Image 1: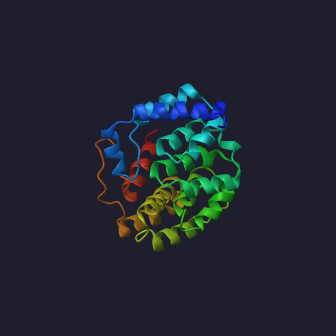
Image 2 (image 1 turned 90 degrees about the vertical axis):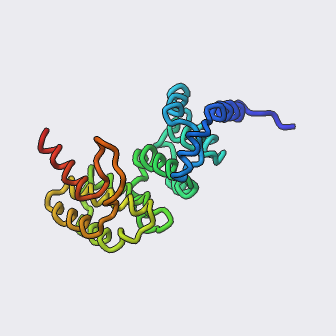
Image 3 (image 1 turned 120 degrees about the vertical axis):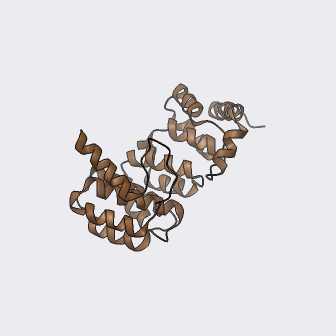
Length: 226
């Protein structure tokens, strides 16, 4: 019988802790959004804060395929330690929307291969939403070299009929272009008004609507008020 390695024992301990934190009510809410786990995210973050950065443990937790374990793995990993191909495989494995989003925002955006992956993913319909998320990051922080008018052309032609996750990512990019780039603002608002994507999305009091014309107008107003 093979001996259990220290890392395998640690994984078992963490998985047991996550199982104890499982809350059926949280799972019910999460499953409505496609996320098959029942651990409150604040408790998950508390576990990550205690564990701190542990790359090997993170890789082992990711390998379990468990959604809560993968979210924890994203929080305790070392983003710059992953190779391009590793991240490509991980993104394609990330079935749960929350895992997908956290992987892109907390790991890929901090990885030196992010631009290479942005180009590869934007051209791949399977993982296109991740590519658009990285493009949105560039629109805001490093727009040099981006064809903003061309991005608006694609959004105008494809966003209305895009699958939900991809549509959301394209809409975010549309809003970011309108917020950050005054020369393209009127067109971005016009596209949003004509396509009406997320126009009726329920928004909590005090929160900004994801409907692009409203989002753009509000964020620009806040910038001017500073």
